[in-house]
Each structure stands twice: as C-alpha cells, then as structure tokens.
Length: 128
Length: 280
Image (cartoon, rainbow over all chains, first blue to last red; front, side, top):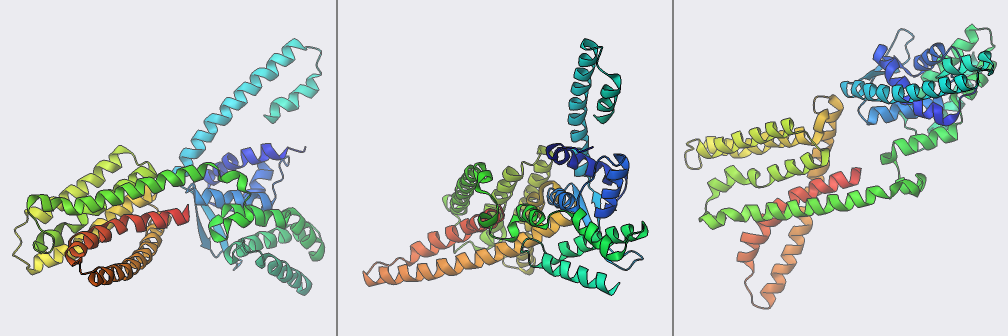
C-alpha cells in the first residue's frame, strides 16, 4: 500500500521518537523497526529518515553519540531526551485526536451506507 | 567484494562533494548503506545487485542534500539553498531582538553611570567598581537570554538568587582596601557570574552536554566579537581625540568618564546579540 508523502512526513516525528523511547537505536535499525511495525506497509528511505533525525537532534529531542560495535564500523546512535519524551506525549495527544475524529467519521459512514462492502471498510479502520 | 568496495568508494566521494553533507554525516549514511547491502546479500542478492538496490532505497541524493542544507543551514550560505519563502517571520523577530538588545545595552551604559549620582566617582572609587562592575551588565545580559529563551519563573528565581547572593557578598564582606581577597573577588566574580549567564543562555538545555557546549562556543565567539568592537572603538576614539585636540577642546575627561565605561559595558550586550544574530 502506498502511503502519501504528506502523511509520511507528518507521522515521522512521533514514530521516530516512539521507536527511540523503546530503546536507543541507529538509522538502519529504525527503518527496520518501522517496516516491522507497519507490517511492511511503510517503507522509509534513508533520504527521508536522516533529515528527520538531524532535525530532532537540533531541537534537543534526541541526543546522538558515536559507538563502535563489534563489526568495527563507527555507528551513530540516537537516544531520546526528556524534552523528546515530552514532545512524544504531545504528539501522541494530537494523533489520538486525529485518530478519534477519523474513527468517528468512518463509523458514521459505515452506518449510513450499510451496503458498503465490509471488506473494503475493514482495512481502512485498521489503517488509522 | 573488491568491486563492492570500489562502488562504495565512488558513492562516498559523490556524497562528499555535497557541501551540506559533512563527513560525519557521510560516515552515518555509509554505515546505513553497508548495513542495507549486507542485509540484501544475506537474503540472496549478489553484492553488486545489493549495492544498486541499497543505493536506490537510500533515496534521491539530491533531495537528501537539499534537506540537509535546510536542516543545517548554519553550515552554508543560507540564501543560496533555502527557498526565500520561509524567511518572512524571522525578519520581524530579528528586528525585535535587535531593539531589545540595543535597549539593554543603553540600560547597561546608564547603569554604570548611576553610582555617580551617589558620589561614587569613576576612576576614584576603584575598589567599588572593581567589585561591582559585573553587576551593571550581567543581570541585563541574563535578562536578555531569559526573554529570548522564554525561561520559566522558577529558573528566573534561581538566577536572581545567584546574582543577589553575589552582590551581597561583594558589598558586605569586610575587604581590606585593595587587598588580595578583594582582588581575588574582582577577578573571579565575573567568571562565576558568567556561568550564571550560561545557565540562562542554555535555557532548558543546561543539563545537557550539547547545551553546555553551545555556551562554550558562544563564549568564544562573544570574546572575538568583543575584542573586535574594542579595537574598532579604540581606533575611532583615538581619531576623535586627535580631532578635538586640533580644535583646542580637551575631550579626555568625557572619553574617560563617559565613553570608555559606557562603551565597554554596552558592548558586552551588543557582542552577545551579534553572536545570537549570527546563529539565528
């Protein structure tokens, strides 16, 4: 499923912050986690992720450090800050509001058009 | 595998030519690319195929470079790469900032002359001025950062406590006239209070390493600006003095008791503002 650019951009901050709230991570692992969480429906590119990470770092929501893992290659790890956690909580409130609004309207639509194919409505509900 | 290394070398060189992408960023992206390639090779692709797929998945490097330029606009000439559409509001903010800084500089200049009203003459009561010089400007400078960083009242309260405690100490402690203790205080008080300014400067980030490092950078740049202003001011004052001498007016008392103290103290605020304005 193709998710449009605006939606990807808007959701990138909460997703990255939430993944870092689980544990410290680095670019590639974050992309893997996004794919895993979305069941393969969201494919982020490095081109999209790194500017987001660097922006969050500049804003003080995350902190970066370099580490040398066993593979011997330097790797940049990101860690969420307390400010980042606060931002995540705020993003979460906003997304829940959007989510609730959409759920309301999806339900209203499925009530007023009972003939609507439930197989079509179901993935939409899951998607939000 | 040799071919793969060559390809990655080429890719890295291509990336390095982008001004907006620094070598640490290149290292980060290269780590990503290698990880991606390794993952694809594990799933059965030949190294050269894996490289192509990995590069493709990284996304368009031109737009990556553009995004980085936007994100790290301090790294290059902003106007050349960032579209002018998103610089409308900051201009108004920059103007307010300049006005506030200028007012504070004038306030500091007036403050340094205020003790004259109570009979403490500049150039005569050295020990009073040596101990109190910083109190005429650093609280104002702190106020500037409090305003700029929109600090909460509890932080402001602690900053105020620090200044009041220092001021009380500097003026209540029974110093011997121009003794060592007094000298020690006069030298170290500015340094201690500069750290208080640092807390205000870093705002909510003073507990983080990045915030403190920013303050160190700020201090360095501040010093450079201050020295430049002092040199410029010195040369200018020298010319003025010569001119007045030529027409037979003795301007030295004015320079000594007004221009020098007011200029030197006001320049502290101005230099701080310049550093801030450069970074904005």
